[in-house]
Length: 167
Image 1 (cartoon, one colour):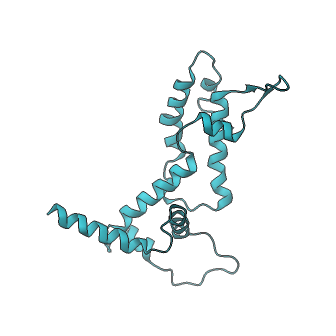
Image 2 (tube, helix red, strand yellow):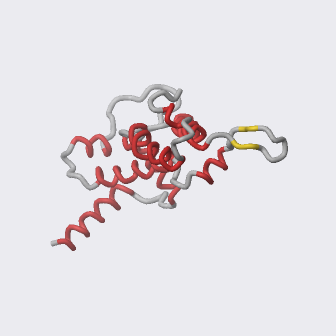
Image 3 (tube, rainbow, N blue to C red):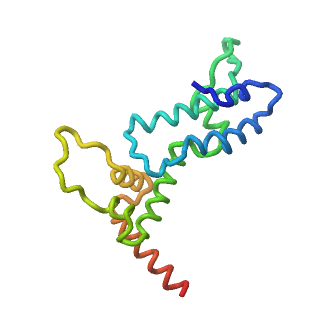
């Protein structure tokens, strides 16, 4: 449930613009803290979106239905129309891809790079393999339209070109 600061979203004397600013500046950064390194399954990717919809429903309130004259909750499409910023899952994916570029451009001796590129030597457990962080990156790149490329090589060559230009 919404607990910290949720009472501010039901006050009618607080404007919707102020409520949205509170959500963008306080709540969203707390929810997205460390999302660059999360390895989420598809079912788990829905949870932040559900949370965002619940917060937006608290902010925008209910709506009077023209046909029946009863109050009802706003549908997800109506929430997307009212809240013009990108949804929380899209923000998570863009931050993950940005952080991937930073890690791919680091030195090969750094621990983060070795974890990203290295392959474990032990056997994996039986059953369907878990969804890895690298799998999430490949799926994000396919959504953008850069599916079949070697993204580590692309990031390193791009950083070499920019360093040569800056010299």
